[in-house]
Image 1 (cartoon, rainbow over the protein chains, first blue to last red):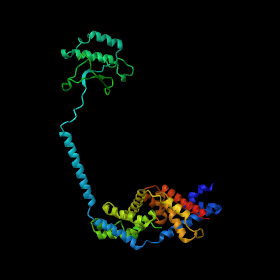
Image 2: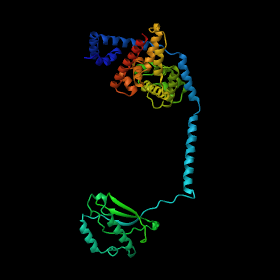
Image 3: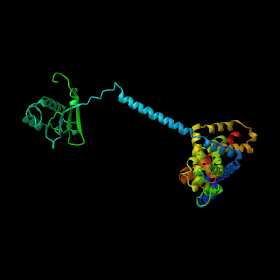
Image 4: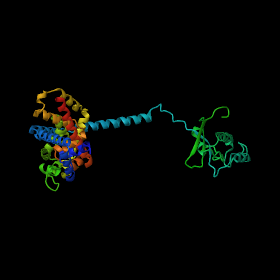
Length: 225
Length: 193
């Protein structure tokens, strides 16, 4: 066995850190190996020397100095706490002032423009081939006439436009090459009076997965508007 | 071998984990806290001195340890006070050393290599200096393990408890530390010849 393997054990042996059985084995090896015998002797010499050096007690004045410094520190008023309290108070006041300024400032930034929902495309129960969907669409009527009950006449043009846009958009990407997964079944203009003039439009496409809804945002331009 | 239990008895702690000085100090008695410091100052300053390698840093560390003791009087159990003090002393010394970004070991090595008369290499003073500096060549964890085991006389299991390591890890650290010290002394001795 190589002596390198014994080194760690010899080091522990020199400090008396081995169990009896292990110590006996190391002792036997040392008696047969000159290099490990020297190593053990050197380690013992160093440990004895180190203990000797550190056995000398420190002067009493050194201990007293520490005690005095600690007691003096304890006698001091808690200035640090007062400073922290001041700092915390100032920070709270600054935060409050900032919030007030945000609320009352005259030139507050306008709210971001909300897209207007122009059509909602609900999901279908089962997949319908693209051809079938087209036929059914014709049966229901041409865009602009095939309105469902409850739709207002004024919304027909909008509905037609949304339908065309929905058709143009094609099947939703998440359908994984299933073109008729989101069939256009009903189109309703969603009331958004607050953003009536917004040029941004949105089509909401429902998919087979209830957790997945596709929003199609587009900006309306041109004379149709 | 000195154990933590023996250290507690030497420090004047009463049996069954009771310590009237600790209880009085908790109640705000400064004289009782002074007594607590006197009981444990050898443990704290001695360990800090061995870890830091110089008196000034050791005193700074000891002051911080006792201030932490004062702030934590309500949380410390009498039976665990010695172990707590060892642990905090080791941590404070490590923190102080990291703050200083100490390069002392390298400087010491150069100092040892350049100075002195070869004829005095075996002198007692030089041997002492060599041993002290070899201790400072070790990593923080190795030095802490060696100081607690070989100089403070704690058992390997107690050292593991103080350092928050396993017994196996501590044995490995102690073994490596002893071998590193021996290598340092040997290298220096060869250079001097």
